[in-house]
Amino acid sequence: MRPGLFLAGVFLATAAFAQNQPKIAPTPAPLQRSTSVSKQFVIYYNDGTVRSRLARKTEDLKQEWLRRLRLKDEWRAPIIVQIVSTRLPDAPRLRTSVHESDGGEMKVQIDVFDPSSLKGPEFDLEVYRALALEYAYRKTPPKAGKPVTQPPAWLLEGLHEDSATRDEGIPSGLFEMLVRSGPPPRLEAFLKIRPESLDATSRAVYRAQAMALLRALLALPGGPGHLADYLAGLPGVNPADAGKLLQKFPALAAQPGNLSKMWTLSLADASASDRSKPFGMAETQRQLALLLDFSTPEDPKKPEAGNVTGPEALQALARSGPGRYILKQKTEDLLRLELRAHPIMRPIAEEYRIIAAELTVKPGRNLEKRIRKNMELQQAVVQRAGAIEDYLNWFEASQLTTPSREFDVTLGAPGTFEPFKRNDAISRQLDDLESRGW
Image (cartoon, rainbow, N blue to C red):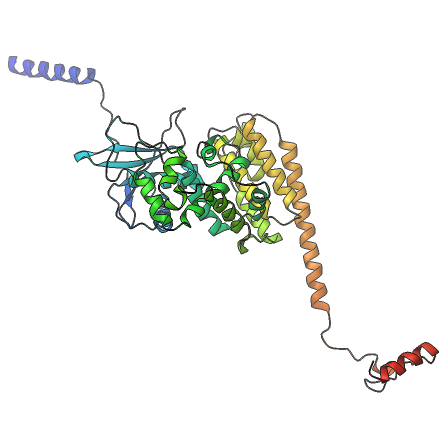
């Protein structure tokens, strides 16, 4: 009996000890990943469809980067794109950082804290930022704890604007306004602007100026190579130093004033593009529907309303966490559409832009009546435009292309009807002059 009792006591003691030990959480499953075609971008996320789409998108942006700067694909450091499921209250929507890896090498990482930012230009700007950092620190990887020099904001914004204008067309009204307003700003002041602190309209103007500056520099003799040299020497240099930028371009080092002339000509050339034609009625409606095609979670002030879609979601979107950033981008997109919209739809797009701008500044404002009134006006304009188009189509289709011959008996057949001739003095004088060949 003693050996049995001893073994039972040992078992009970072991069970009690195991019960008092803290439970170890199971190891989370590793995130799945996808690699882009060039192998430089590695995307971590559990959704395979999103990973595949991001792999294609990053490669497209990379090809644009290589094309504009005329670089070869000789990357050395990978760029990690990680979509984070949890977000701290003070965390940004996107963050790009440089890390030291094994063997003194480096890697560039883009952390996406808000997946909704993948649909806007913010992600494109961060990809350009990551490509610029990888190129700038390719020969001298940064050490852990050392500050990293960020690429100039005008370059990133200019690259994005240059790519967007090729796909969407150039908003001629914006560029014409810039040309009429006078010469571009001084380079020293322009390089110190922080675009993230600007409102939507000011940022659209800044992007237009940045794109014109980029095109002016690339148009110089050896411009792409000189700009690439400037980026390669960026570590340790203040991006706001205009002298360092001009030193890399021999054509401007001797005569810096030529840059202002080329900058202005670049703006004028952009405003004269054939792609600045305004949208028609149908295309304006389609573009506006795409801009306002989004849904938001429940409004904290009106939980009984449920999910809201379309323009009515603007208020709920403003009161959500990332709403201010999304509305700011919507304001920029609506400004672009307003510049090219059909004249009948332009006031409607303008009203949506003003509403989005006001909600960006004061998310708690109640603009429900204005939104619904603008929606009703939009619906009425669309219906009236459709009715007018239907009537014009009917009128054109109902016109006869050949004479009906129904009145030939009354008027006489063609060629037999004699028109009435006047016999007064003035008519005889005119007939006499006509017979003489006058």
